[in-house]
Image 1 (tube, rainbow, N blue to C red):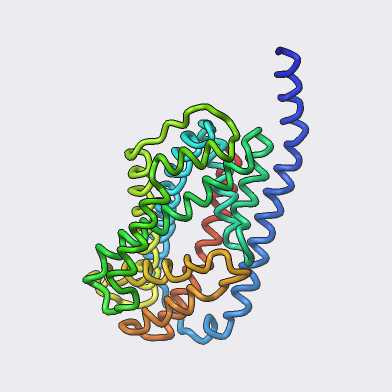
Image 2 (cartoon, rainbow, N blue to C red):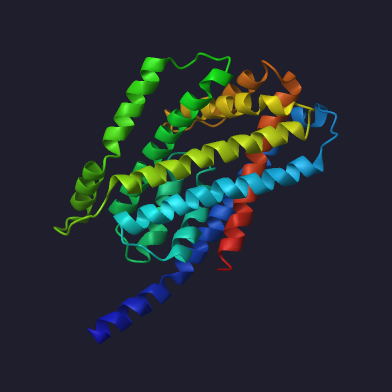
Length: 303
């Protein structure tokens, strides 16, 4: 038994360079995509007369961090229950790399990154993929809950009540503790009991609601850094941010949905914000999200 433990440790040490190479590749590709994104939108960025409010931009960093913390806590709790991966430092670091990889063009880069990094720790790729799909469903359900609460403040009727309730019911079924426990047992191919309760899924859902609200508030302060938008528009911004996110979430597994959320969000914002401001704010939202995600990755490697 002792020799097996030593072999496992040596194996993990031997795979450390692979994790470093993977992490560096994700960061470099993200920075390259950021450069491409700025270059592609250079006309809008240079045409706008910049008079930014740097205090509001600094606040966007705080709000992104709050949204990130809520998502990381949810992911840690999920992996602890579904995969018995209870090392919060590892879960935090892998989540940061996965979140950054998600910003790359293409399909499921975040899931692939997580699967490879967790595999180095001996966690089943199938379980990681399942947890990532459950996360997608929970984020979508949390978005529906948020939008239903915020809908009275939105002037858009793009999503009717019945489709919202139907999607909410489907999400509740897919994230039912018994359904999740059955799925985990299937991918683990083990007979052990998986202890999942309603309070687990409700806690994850609650945290993901906060990720929607904090990230929507981040968009609001970015707009305010460019344009004197009254505080009373915050619920409207939150509703439109959630609506645009839900619409593009439906296309998660398409080969690319690059730019779709930005176009949708610009059209929604242009109803009450000058169109150039809406366009620049959306571009900044994308760019700053990548920059902040790189920052969290770099900080996570220090833990």
